[in-house]
Image (cartoon, rainbow, N blue to C red; front, top):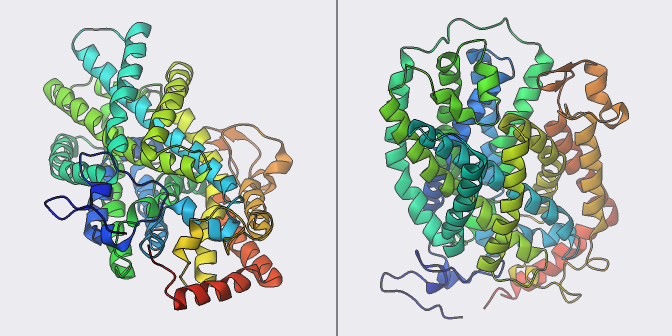
Length: 509
């Protein structure tokens, strides 16, 4: 395949400010234009983000002191190493996450976790839209306009309409725009830090060291909303890297562009929580329907800066939402919908519109996030473990063009297009994760016995028991897949066929 090139040498299949033509299909070597630092720049533009600021404040709302929250922020964001590992398959296969996932689960079986991923991306998109509407309401309040129902309706429609633009255009556009946003947003958050330093109360904990069980619930929350919750998106963007991109540089650059900015952003959110509202109203304000209301009626941060800050916040949230919409679009394609990538973006936006209406008028952001995190953990922890275990068992290689086949001619077809080994491991991992999940919604005690055994009362973060759901899901997912795949020999048989194809230079286009 010969790619048409623009004057600057970039392939027209993925040209900035043009509609990207690629979806879940194979990206030929002639169109691999990105370097590891390009991908890191895109992620960094999305990581210096108000969402992580809010997560830091909500962590404080669990009941932690600043130093307790800081320990969770640092440890939780180490999970970005998982995203780095889950970005190493794209350069070799030239396709998206749920194109690659056809190897482990089978072309038809892969639709099972892909459906969960599509729901997850919609959930993150709605979160961004809730915050966009919230920031806009603060701006209108500064102008003397009250937050009426008609105003909220108009803002939701406007937000959904605007957020379509970048993911509609595609990968190269997002890389260019998000990289350009890094410096101005670093400056705006440094100014916010300057206003905050002299007023933060980090040395006076609001309470003694919390129970270790609540700490585990905070860790599960942080891990999921930082690295783990993005593992299913990594290869959607790294597939534009050259196949020979050094693995260490890919992981290192990605970690540098994500974990470090997010640690800083979440820490800033925790700092601001300590002073922006009174101790009696802090939790209620940050855990309410619009956490940005904390910036109203206070005298530490000047009103003029609040206006500038909220304007920047709105722009930035559109940027990070573009990643979610892009990934949900290519996931719809992987599910088998005969839509072009940009058509899938339009469909997802319409669905998000309805969910956002419900979320804005029926729930607080913190409740929405905690419920959402619980649901994400159950499927994504075992899936991530299976995905990486399968990659290791295949000795870090797949047959790229076989991944594009969705019928019985694919070497990954298994039984009726389903690898029951992976499905079984996924279900085992999901049950294991659920058994140790500290849920914010009440479920029968037999569904999460480990959490029930360690606590039987309901607190602010849910049941007072421990939350080992992330580690149970990862551990049991990986172990179950390795054992089942070894017993059945399902992976070993496919590896032999892969090697024949790869040795015969079957990766051509």
